[in-house]
Amino acid sequence: MRYAITHVTHFAYDSPVSESHMEVRMQPRTDDRQTCLRYDLHVEPRARPHTFHDHLSNWVDYFSVPRTHQSLTITARADVQVHGTADLPRSLDAAAWQEVDDWSRQDAHWDLRHPSAFAVWTPALAAYAESIPAARARSADPLSTARDISAAVHRDFVYAPNSTKVNSAIDEALGSRSGVCQDLSHIMVALLRRLDLPARYISGYIAPAPNGPDADPISSATHAWVEVRLPQLGWVGFDPTNDIEAGERHIRVAIGRDYADVPPARGVCKGAAASTLTVSVAVRPADPSDALPLSIPGASSSISQISARTNDSGQPSLQQRQQQQ
Image (cartoon, rainbow, N blue to C red; front, side, top):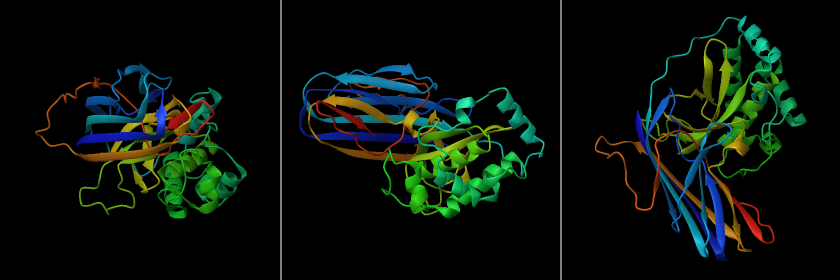
């Protein structure tokens, strides 16, 4: 499937700010699962983005607006071809746990087997793990375990838009048994890591189901899900919000230990103004007539790999105001 994506982030300030410095992760990956055919970034007021790879090999655009402004709009457009994936087996041999133990002895994937900023092993997380046989202790095989945990998180948590913020602690969703895709992904990542399974957080987009927007509980544009490293299979994606395996509708943008590694927009502005954040994302099947590449006046264009996700505004300080999507 080929998809056209438009991701618009707009910061509005209640009084002028004198400058802004931002970095964004909005460029979809190019890897064995998908190809980013086109990527354009446009900033208003006009700015010239520069690009680098972060320590997780995500593409990051960064720019500065060194003059007074009262709004900032970041528009990212991408055209992505998602390749088909092979069907997973029903299960793995129970001996696959031996290979997982070998990774631990070799310190492989260390940072993806231990707690991180939002995937924390709190007492509430441990108590929840006790309620799930597959998360309480190793059983069956690693693939079946991952499927069972994804199904349990989907069953036990209510998807509730706007119920948490991007900086909400894991215990908030655990206490209310509700949250957004970010929260459910953090919980699943933490549960998998407690079993010593390497797990990572995926930020990206999910395309609408072909047979309508109500085909599954969540068919919104921006999305988060989980990948777990499994013997014989490599990295396998699970979407606990929808209780499905990641497939052709899942468009990968950035990979991290959790959301803290992959915010779509993060930065600071100079001034005491309060800000309001508005995010708009559209994902649609690309039309065969869509031109490549797309040219946007003043845009920064590249064709490569990685970046993003969505939600809240930043926290003010006296002279500087952090802003984060």
